[in-house]
Image 1 (cartoon, rainbow, N blue to C red):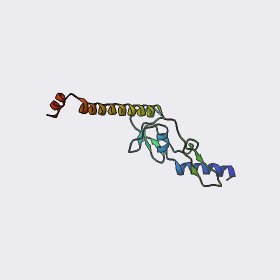
Image 2: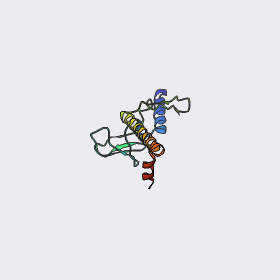
Image 3: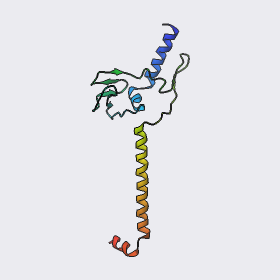
Image 4: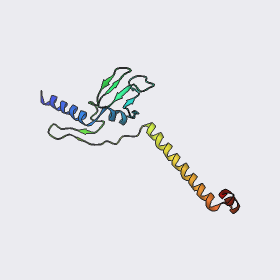
Length: 135
């Protein structure tokens, strides 16, 4: 092998040793169930048909592979003379993640408001109303 071929082999080894297909899918916003199944992004899929672990395989369309070509996405640095290391890269949230964050924030605001109202009712309601509620 030439030096360049050995460098490319090291890239593949670094990626395979540090990043799974499941990590790749989740980092790109694919919902992976606890059993490792997801809807395949390579064809129109209404129910999970892709198995993700170290590699991926779609039972629907037959696509298969691993995370070999994703070194840049995960900030993997490689040098044939140094030990490989992973440098985390901060990703922008997906629209679904942004929506979930907003939904959680709304829920928190509403529950905080609900608890404030309950506290106000307990402390400031007219005495007659408090007596009726305590019965």
